[in-house]
Length: 438
Image 1 (spheres, helix red, strand yellow):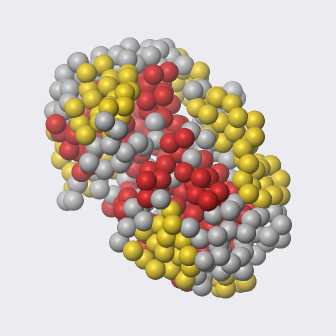
Image 2 (cartoon, rainbow, N blue to C red):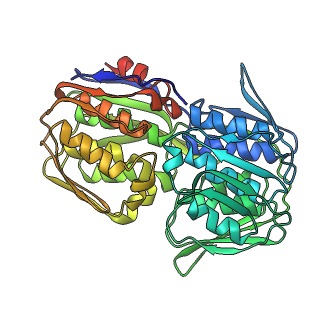
């Protein structure tokens, strides 16, 4: 959704210090707009991430009848009610947002409308079959491009068919798509989750008044939602995005003498794996002022320069930090010894193939990396700077761009990111924030 490439250089920095805030949580921002658009009445949202991905969600919900406006006090959303989505008059351009696409496919699947989904070059390479399968079982008719990719056309069925669906892969997006489809489906729709994933959808659906229950059975989460719901408007405050907070936190850990506080960060246990792993590595990280905002746990996180040690990252933590692995790869590159990270097949189908792209970039700036089918092995420098002096391809991936920007802060020669434009999808103020910490 940006124009020509915008290269940027990041050079070795003195100590980073200060207190900053990162943009609102992207996952929660998407869901807040969608559920507010399905409520009857006006909802208010503060702290919404105003990046390209979330703005694409807002545009799509407007195209299906919701009134969404930005004012001096935040965002207002006048919803159409569950079952009230209107036929969009043109294709829904989702830009770079896989979350928007998969969740909105769920919404459309149980409404009597047809929607065509398009996206940018990166999104158009991402597979949608994992969502198409359960939505087809509910009665949606999907015509996709080869490989189950965008552009695709989805024709919803009303009434849709309630299903019980066991997730074949750990995916909060697939889980959420089925639950959102279940909102307008008669009866009870069930999702069985063998491995827990982020639970923002369950928390927010409950907050809006949906009849949703979660039970643990034989070690699996069984989530049930009763359809034909009536959602009530809410006032929502979106906490800071832990995936965005990962970048200033890792920067503080690897740049000597640094001490950085990131305020108002979401610390939902289903998203907090990064902090657990960094502490395993010896990172000095402290949580302060814990509180709950809009049903989500929040804290202020302080990170100080630390002597990190390589670890074997437990694969079972992967779902709780899947978006933070690019930042962790950078931290591992400056640790003492070897860090082994496996069970990360999901990274192959993100905005880019994040395993291959990070391995390529880390080698370019002088790190020692072994690429595995399902992860990376990184042999760190023991805290010494990396050589740098390379141009890194971001592959239209915002998290790749920010990861190597952070790495450049402790390289002997500057690191050039070939295009910082994609960062606008999740963290429009990233470069300014880094400058404020110097």
